[in-house]
Image 1: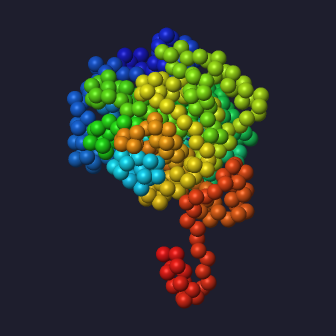
Image 2: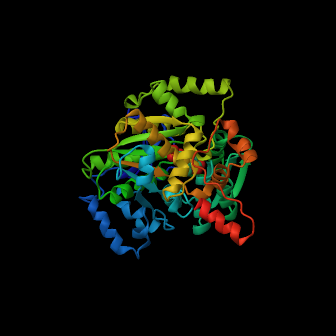
Image 3: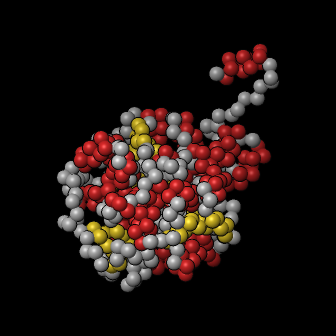
Length: 464
Ligand code: F0G
């Protein structure tokens, strides 16, 4: 085993390790989650984060152009010649005063980290290029994932762009937006529609990957999370290397929050930042296992000795009440988040909180984000809806500096956007009303006009 880079059990009491090249992504000793671990004394680490600004001058090198790999000294598990990049991570961190005002923050205090600009339109590409790199290092011929849509879109894009592996995708039936499904199909991945939801599909893909030796790219794969750390490096870079007070992120399978805390924990350990930000994870109310367990049942990391019986009895109750995850924010429609232990550790490290927001507030926040100039999908807007709630509660102060992560592009789920803005009664009732959405407060309705010059002029003067 390389003693510089290896995989390490997240449970400090277990201490199990696996080789860098292992692909089971479970601790061989206890079956728990693994981290990618480095002996930082043996890898060269820059003395200051400003070092990374120098990479901009070297953009002709694809590794320095990539918004992931230009930080490769902070995820040093692959030699340069093994690295896979398709130009991911060219993203924006934009000051958003109009959205700040909606959320209750003062001007200049809110920044939106827009991950929709990635090649497949979501943050997943940050992790996929890292997983693909590891897969290539291990000689994999096929890669698989279960997905609510974005992981599968990303996998399909990387398979098509690199021609290195065959992609196999597991999706739940009727649980994926057309934008995302269209990407899987267009880019030629083998797409299996399982009769069930994401939680079922994730269970199956792990079994099948084990049985057939297919490389798994879900976020249980710790190399995915290494790539996603760079979202935080780019946030810091955009803020001139100043650590924000809060990072607010939607929570689904809880990969991002786990990855972000690892990023900040390592930077602090390496002396590259003086403090870590606080983290807020936002669940959709229809899929809020993490909120329930953390905020209502008091589940805590507890140095790795978290109370598994609280999790078990929560899941037993879900099953006996036949409660399935159910939210319009389909990307985070997940009841059994695979990274739950890592997310507990993340909140412990970064003094975190969890909130749960109803679909109506997610859709209103989404419309406000759109009106502010950045389009996102419903799951992404949970971050701003959650921020608004936390400001209202006084947990986040009006003058604190906050970054919300917009995880996916607005065109991923245009059905929801059109349903919200047209508020056509039949569509509205069918899609939104039954989920308790009573109003579409910020709907920008299309104005019907006869094909007549005077009528068109009048409509513009009335509504413009
Ligand atoms: N936002 C979007 C747009 C997502 O697609 C996802 C997860 C999340 C947030 C949640 O992130 O899992 O790190 O907490 N989508 C996965 C998928 C599950 O299959 O595409 P997380």
